[in-house]
Length: 96
Image (cartoon, rainbow, N blue to C red; front, side, top):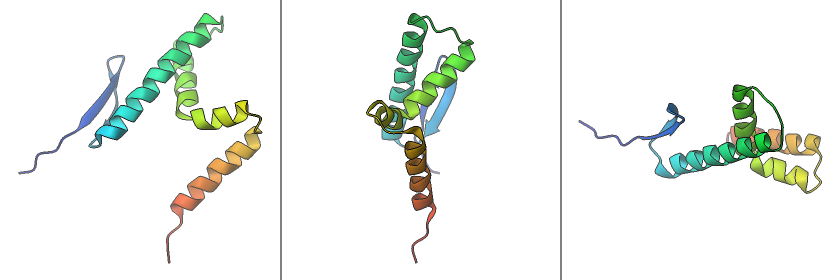
């Protein structure tokens, strides 16, 4: 019989992520924490969104913080998106 350790990330009472890697669980938990802070900031600035839309927006921004940061530094969205597509293709390539 095997013993398997699983890390479960729960957010607002809902199971969001399950992994066997503690580092990945901590990383995901931190991303959700940042998303909560972003959502609070967005609301405090007077932006009105449906709660689900606000949560989705905040999580998307948190997950893509590096790309968003590049755009704050002047990169164009099309270039950032192009770089992301290139990274996915590179990951999908098989070595000969």
